[in-house]
Image 1 (cartoon, rainbow, N blue to C red):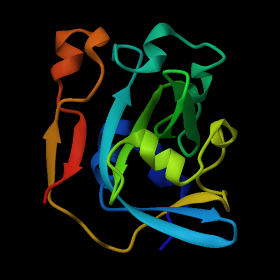
Image 2 (image 1 turned 180 degrees about the vertical axis):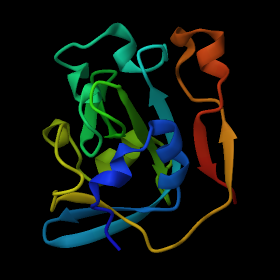
Image 3 (image 1 turned 90 degrees about the vertical axis):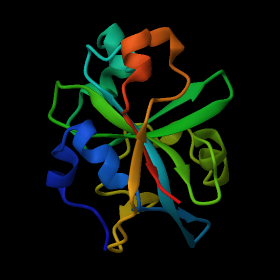
Length: 169
């Protein structure tokens, strides 16, 4: 079943991140639908979260994080890889969930490359997109929590908080 209800995306990123694990990320690519099970996510929440791009304030790049949940936040990292996030929460309370891994694709950059997700997906509606959407087939994996990855710049507290959610096994 497609996840297209606006209410789902009004959850906080911390509520939503574990819920996305086990869901299907679906991509219409050249008329074919590719479905990949999400196996790992990371939560980024609020201006106080030093690992969240919104911690630097509202800028042209980060303004998408301040929108009402239900849109994609896609950005370029290291000048070469796009990363896919889903914005969650109320308008003006910034936050998103990074889709870190799907089955058979370890790493967010490999995932976006495989699914040909680029900057043109930034700000696209998750609810209305016919190119990229989420589905729930009822699968609920056991989930473990871990510290987020690659955020040493955020300081010890934010580096060690267990806001990474991974399907076990």
